[in-house]
Image (cartoon, rainbow, N blue to C red; front, side):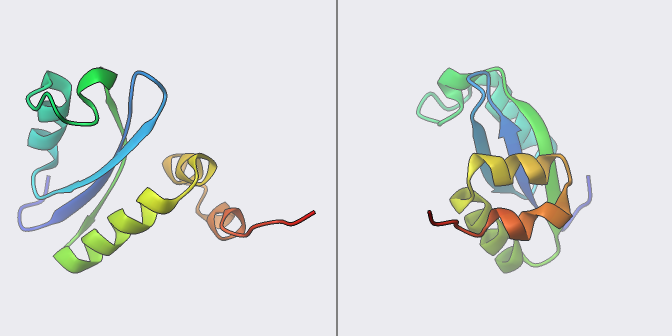
Length: 98
């Protein structure tokens, strides 16, 4: 991991849901999720978790904005991100009306 960077990460939980977070120490944070250190954490009852995506930023504000953006995405869009299908992301943001 790179020192001085902020990581936005996505975990896949045992219940097949995604959790998105931000940290400056990715290895430590994933270990905390896995160990169940915080009993009130979203991931506590959804363990084990697997790190499926991360991106690093040198600017904490960019990282925070990206985390907030991902948290608003649909499951399908998060899965496209995890699969690195970046070209499909813009189309998944559009709503279709019948």
